[in-house]
Image 1 (cartoon, protein in one colour):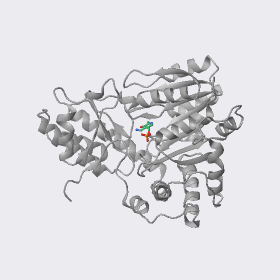
Image 2 (cartoon, rainbow, N blue to C red):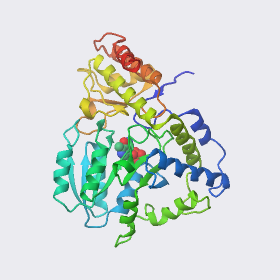
Image 3 (cartoon, rainbow, N blue to C red):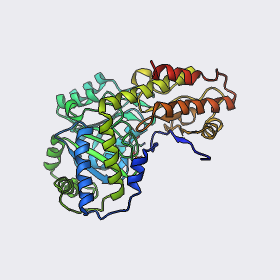
Image 4 (cartoon, rainbow, N blue to C red):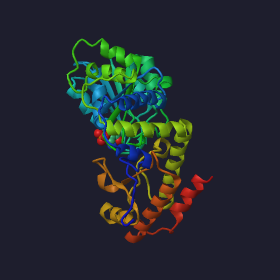
Length: 387
Ligand code: PMP
């Protein structure tokens, strides 16, 4: 096939053929028995993948930002205090979003490439008065991963509802929602979940649902309101027809296939595969003489964020890498946008995909005149993958 290239950006990603096949099947009614069954199965699969047996899953048509909005709209009432942990663009976005719902927001922002320390978060929580704590598990603008287990534990310790933006982590990075005590874990279909863009997904703990039920004021966002969606989720899971807003029928059918594949692989195996891909990619980047945005100790498994070598720009490099067979993403964080690029490695990606991508990166670097030993990146990745 001419012009074929691997889509190695941090979402959307390469999807499995079976998932795409399900997406392309004839659309059924949203109350057809087969679709009701598919939706019901999806909700059951989500509890298993989120590792949250007593959680309430929600599947709503929209992107990851809608999932953030659903959690914010339902948990925040005007005047509530929220602590927002930010390690990049998406943490900052959560702060802006909660302000729209009248929250009084305190931000804890990490220096670029670093995580916010647990000690600092605990110091803030100890001041008291917070209702909600939000944290981006992996911020896709920096590749920094926060300690999600510590977030959940601190939330329970201080009686604060925790929301984990897992858009760039769920089904790639390890998340144990119930064991770690996280109240909402949200994501979107197009990343490690492995389904084309269009679904906002979240699981809410019984504590989050109770907090929503005890609101004094109605949810100010009509579409996001759990009053509208909870009866729908309950109906589909009980295999009863119901309707509030037309579900994204084909995407939900594709989701069933992808979640089935995730469960077949096994969560431990999947987390370990992502860890291996992440560390192989970072070793390759180092071997090619490039530095990276996240500090190694907090670097995510789902994407890497290399800095361009001196004298090389994105417009020099990325089209060359594309021509050699891999599509990579430019920088996103406004302060350093033009100095780095991003490689996604999650979901269906195999070691072979990663090696092909590093090979394409080497071809691109060679075309820009950057000095390095051809093959050094691939060899470094191989040493990790086959250790
Ligand atoms: N949070 C994180 C961590 C993300 O990476 C993204 C998307 N890149 C979002 C939220 C927003 O998701 P969407 O673009 O699907 O609205």
